[in-house]
Image (cartoon, rainbow, N blue to C red; front, side):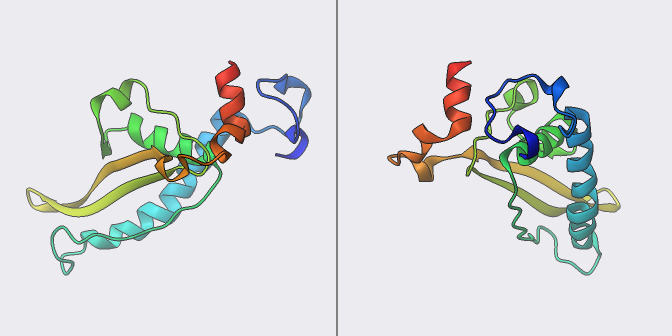
Length: 144
């Protein structure tokens, strides 16, 4: 968190020079996604790969990074997800689990990668644990 460590949210960003802007964070997310994920999954569109073959990719990062990345995907026409998420994506809490499925699909004469968000921000594995109540993001979101 750099200079933001220990500060409450929202706070005065203007006085903290090392804070990454929202636009810069989104750019960093999408640049990483294009370089790491899109490059990797493009291999499933090769003609020798069987139709509907899935790839498993584990991505672990901070909640803010993952939330911005998934919101960028949801706002594009690149993924399939519930229509209401296009209007307002659900909250993505820390330690949540999201599942994005990539499959090779044939569209006419071309093979493409179909992307479906199967699960977004699931925290059911935390139910019954005090960690949810004690999570700083949750506490501050509830105070807003």
